[in-house]
Image (cartoon, rainbow, N blue to C red; front, side):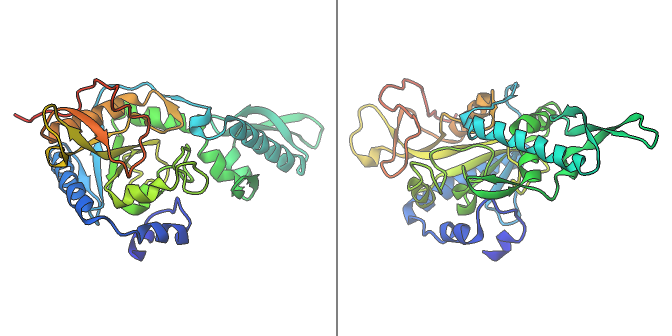
Length: 320
């Protein structure tokens, strides 16, 4: 799989990624996964989408209900206190760098990514150099984190508060896309080294052991991206599409419970207001599959707040 790693920026360390890529899929699960994935591919081709070069990913332009997102500086984006600490560290790094040159901060605009730098000329008059790039000043610095020393520029560039401007621009410009992937690498990286976290983080998530089963038993991952970010370097969020058994009234036994794909309830993202994306994706899944009834989780997969017995929601429908 080295050709895959040659054109993507790793969200996972190479050795870790290789470990997950080498997981062997259940044959039956692979069969129903690929059948549904092929249906998604046909839908995408008919709606302005495309495949990746290796056919592991489907790119689909978002054409669903309007969404209004805002940066979520809370646990869904990682630790709020961690982001606050990182922002303070970045400002301190800028201050120290300027101080070495006899300069100081006159105006600080973190979201815009600029700083107005004050200094004294030879006559002792205070001058201001406006609009200096914060990223350029901290480009060689690192910040200590729970993951070790991390590039200050990476933290700055990926801060949800700053990326909010990018996603709003993508929405207004019609440049918001979904990437639907069946590749083990993309599934394993669903919540690891991203701008959000969940219990499926493969290093410290409390349910990380289920990630292997997601790969084995046919889970698909969907990333929300800018259409130009085809390598999923800076996704805006993700949701999983999982296989469920469709339990129909009057039928008993597994033979009468076909596999149906549906998205989980939660879009993990450093932004709030992403639910319309999940709802649109759910509508596509329903359109592509036959059958009606209630969904039941597969026992081998983690159930992410999917309240089977108490959920009256109609999940499947028969195509006309």
